[in-house]
Amino acid sequence: MRKFLLSALLFLQIGRLAAQQGTTGANAPRAVRFTHADTLRGAITPERAWWDVVFYDLHVRVQPADSSIQGYNRITYRVLDQSRDMQIDLMTPLEVDSMVQDGQSLAFRRDGNAFFVRMPASLPSGSLQVVTVYYHGRPRVATHPPWDGGFVWTTDSLGNPWIATACQGVGASIWWPNKDTQADEPDSQRIVVTVPDTLVDVSNGRLRRKTLHGNGTISFEWFVQNPINNYDVALNVGKYIHFTDTYTGVNGRLDLDYWVLPFHLNAAKRQFAQVKPMLKCFEYWFGPYPWYTDGYKLVETPYLGMEHQSGIGYGNEYGNGYLGRDLSGTGWGLKWDFILIHESAHEWFGNNITAKDIADMWIHEAFATYAESLYTECQFGKKAGVAYCIGERVGINGDRPVIGAYGVNDEGSQDMYNKGSNMLLTIRQIIDDDKKWRTILQGLNATFRHQTVTGKQVEQYISRQSGIDFSKVFAQYLTTTQIPVFSYYIRDHVLHYRWKGVVKGFDMPVKVTLSHDKFSFIHPSETWQTISVQLSTPSRFRVDSSFYVITAREK
Image 1 (cartoon, rainbow, N blue to C red):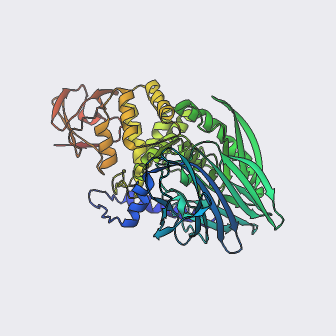
Image 2: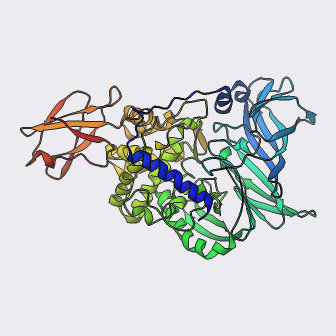
Image 3: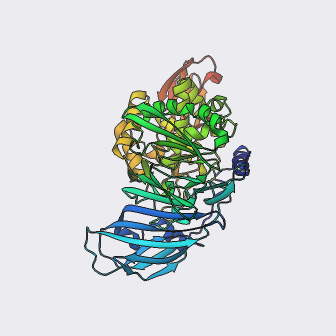
């Protein structure tokens, strides 16, 4: 097992241990002081607001001999308003050599990881302009990829160079200059990577051409025909071998491309047989795969995995589960490949629909984690899918709210995964109509296709399409650390019940047993209510476990 994967497993175990020891946000709040640098990184500053990215033309030369890179990014942008200063981001220790527009060198100053460029006066509103940023240096090394992002410089088991990028959260400007916010995506992008001619680069989109130079290097030109969020842009350099397949989906033929290390070819062909049933399941629930023009691709990486658009990073060692473990503890998670399923789900939630601010990263992770239970349902039935989702509650820490602070690049609690997934399961139970629920999931991907969104937009869409006001449910699960407590007692065949530990006005319905082995909806509030029950003994009373609540018997 590679050392990066061992680190990933240790990280998971530490999180699980915290959950088992009962750490809660209510008792252990996180005190955070955000800095000027956090604002520059996370906010739509005035120097970002006046221009819209149209196209990135990224050229990078990767030099394994000294772990350095050099290149340029030609940025086509549309002028939205008048301004003199443009913010372009590039993290230390990388250096900008020059910036050029219309053949003219531009003056710029550095403020930490942001560069402020003085633009020519009177750029016409609505016009398209092109600024080129030349840069070089040794990019920050990822010490714990993909969680601690940057460049990975390593070798495969035969000693060949193996190089990759992963930068979600920390930001794409850790290795290339761009407008480093999820709120602004280019309409398309070219990625040209030059490497030693004994190696192969695999990036996003489709390979257009290879150019062999006379100096021992080769360039691989990739093109993404669709909008792409900047942290999804990736390079993967190694001694790759390539095999292909096709899938007939709802929008016709979809090309499947797989890039793996040669000695893993047979294992990859066996394991990647899960791709087609995954695509069938997710197209059923979420609608068409969003990138038919760019294809679907899996690339073996020297870290666990990452949802790089149309070029998903895969490092799960060609086995089921999460490095051979079932995160739900139910057994269902060992029947499919966690990284293949979870990261592919991000093609719909995270890549097709992208949160404008990383504080709303739950849009990506809650839905992708919930997709794991939907895939289990597709393969083994609804009860299995529900059991898997419930089982993942063991990984919820309750350390802080799921939604982070806006405008400072704060992604909130890792509970966005399992708590977010169980919130969605709860919402599905409240809607109590799987056809409508499927229509909502498909509608999200159609309505917000290839767009950046806020969390509020997603919340309001679900409420509007379901005909149920879920605002208090979202507020409870996303902005507090408390799980709703269903408090009750039964006396003389009368159930007394209410919600405790909830946001003001919380009135979420829930299913309970009012008679033997039959669940019925009731509508608790913060005040005591009563209803008759027909149970032989109070101990037969149950709250439907599909609802993510705590049950507390009083008196």
